[in-house]
Length: 187
Image (cartoon, rainbow, N blue to C red):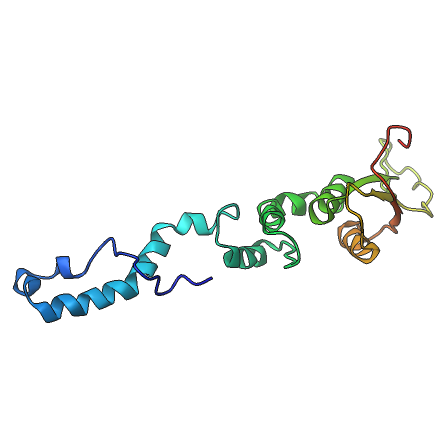
């Protein structure tokens, strides 16, 4: 997509109309400034709509890639445009929840469209007594169960990559990919 030289785009601020009265009837001056108007019209249109360029819900599709780089959002060109826009719009929220079960579940749902459930504490513990002994180390770590929500294929490599990126560094997250939608019996 290009925003340069849009055919037929009128200038909201024609230069010929702003010239001194001496040049108002000069054919060469009016033609010359109308050529400049053609060049400047897309610039003015972009500046007039600048807030829309920074809103991922309405920004031009090629601009969404740039916005994703600003907020550190993952932008996969294979995703549908609506999903890419949502990933950019929710990037700050997902960064805030990074390293938590909620953040992991939301990242998997947003990027892959799957239902996920996280069980296990990941080794975090606290005590109200100062100087208390540390809890025993958990050998297993959290378990992430991923279930398909209508997707025929879940790429296990992508699931593992997202889990590795979103799990806390000190934990060893395990992943199970289960067929079918979640049921109340399995919970």
